[in-house]
Length: 327
Image (cartoon, rainbow, N blue to C red; front, side, top):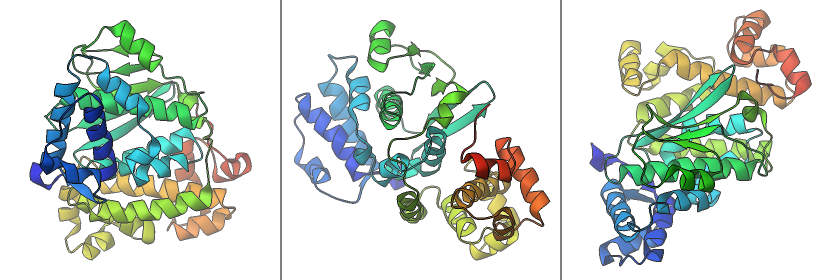
């Protein structure tokens, strides 16, 4: 199955350039990745990571430095989409949904609790796993800080692998506590961080970028069922499971099995999208009755109950305040 995985060219180019800066000699077979505009096969991506790891072997902080220096544009359209979000919490939600565009053999998962949040990183690759995880975690921390004008303050960064450099050096580079040998790879933060406004929020641009990202996500061979289901729900939020499954050429039970294979349920997928659509509509000034009808709720009360469950606020409170205030 790995032959079907791919990575966006811009991200691949960033890794290849980093390998070259460390003195790596790039084989002619890999040079086209510097100029191509499409996606790079995983076999090539693995070879480039091996080049980087070998060239930077003498510097145990090389991967963390690389991740800290990555720019939003090197994450392709996903980076631009994150910059256009209103809050850091919105950006985390977008990252969990669209990260496969960057590389479709790893994903992010956001776990929200009253006392804090965790952005978990779930890679499926094997080659240079430790370096790639460190790049991803350092990039997440650095980009979050940049998007919030330096205000983002993570509690700690967790790595499953053993230390490749001393913890004090890692903590000095990332600007927060770092722990190795943990049950997961992730960035832990206080719940209040989710409400931090971003410096380049833009609703019209965000909507445009999200539509483009939906198309790109749906075109990926990996995760195509959930991506196609997500696209159909966005276009037809009133549709239920059976209608969506029919459009995908399968039964509702078959759709459930396909989604279960991607560690998600139809209910969770649809609720996450309805929440996103509701927030966009309310922020755009649409009334509660209008939003309720568009999203297929039986009445305003049913919509209000669902919205309160998602956010802790009624739609009217959210519309007045303009954002969800995390507990």
